Picture 1 (cartoon, protein in one colour):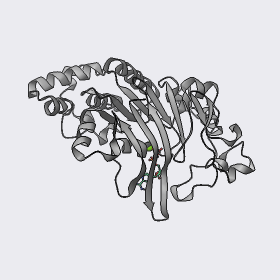
Picture 2 (picture 1 turned 90 degrees about the vertical axis):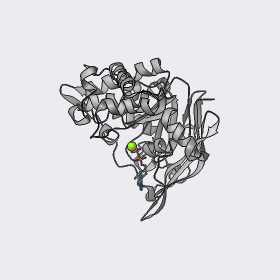
Picture 3 (picture 1 turned 180 degrees about the vertical axis):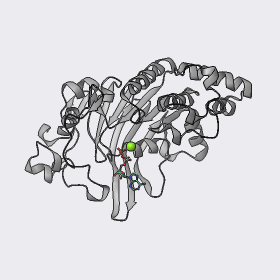
Picture 4 (picture 1 turned 135 degrees about the vertical axis):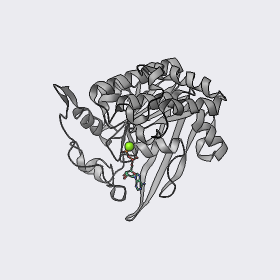
Amino acid sequence: MGILSVKDLVITFETPEGLGRAVDGISFELEVNETLGIVGESGCGKTVTALSILRLLSEPPGKIESGEIIFEGNDILSMNNKDLRKLRGNKIAMIFQEPMTALNPVFTIGSQVGEVFQIHENLSKKEAREKAIEMLKQVGIPDPEVRVDSYPHQLSGGMRQRAMIAMALSLSPSILIADEPTTALDVTVQAQILELMDRLKESFDTAIILITHDLGVVAENAQRVVVMYAGKVVEDGKVEDIFNNPSHPYTQCLIASIPTVSGNGKEKLQEIPGIVPPLHDRPSGCAFHPRCPKVIDECKTTEPALYKISETHHSACLLLR
Ligand SMILES: Nc1ncnc2c1ncn2[C@@H]1O[C@H](COP(=O)(O)OP(=O)(O)O)[C@@H](O)[C@H]1O
Ligand SMILES: [Mg+2]
């Protein structure tokens, strides 16, 4: 039993073209002290899954139709507002791709990190400032005694992301959800932030859900991986299962399209032809069949289940029945 269990989660959106399933019956477990990577192209349902775990999905237009999200024995989907505030305050924290959306531009970094301590630990302003400096130091912000008085726009993208991580971790949450935390950063800074998260996971004993469209990012930073396509889990397994024995054609395509680092940045090897189908136009059978290099006739009509490859590894491809 993991620290967080998502079971048969279904999330719909009302769109002008009709009701569509952004998340279509996904299940996964987060284990204590692990980093779980959730991977898939843009539009696969990663962010709405993350938002639902914190009950931050805007309803409407979204709706959590069914499923369970069990944390510490309780279903987050049936919590009242008081419990939800507690959950978001110091149990589960989330960081985003663009820290500017989470940081308030008119307050200093120090007052924003310190505020968390003032509110939740009843510290004085002075004590909170000291704690803030300590946190900024922990996340590797140079000259924290000076930076504590900087405004968000005075920091680089990488430093802002570090400040947001400091805020998220200041109450030692049991779970950190990081939604594309490094997508806006250049390769070098990206590696530093991922390394920082890994280090903090150990020192704060935090389990991490690392969401990314880039399978390369999870290769070195996750212990287990969930691959999503069009709102479904198409493959899951230990990171070795996924990279040494990728079993779903979608995962194989994602691996082939991992950007390689070249002289002056990232280069795509191979794009997967086609696009993730929009909500109102999901293909019959296996949703990946129109793009799949290994498609057989039956894929167009029969929806695959998640078949067992090994104790730790599952894949939703008819070829593996
Ligand atoms: N507010 C919304 N209204 C309508 N559709 C939405 C809304 N938010 C997300 N969706 C749709 O839900 C699907 C999943 O979106 P999202 O979770 O953001 O994907 P990802 O994070 O994997 O890129 C997409 O098809 C997206 O268009
Ligand atoms: Mg997203």
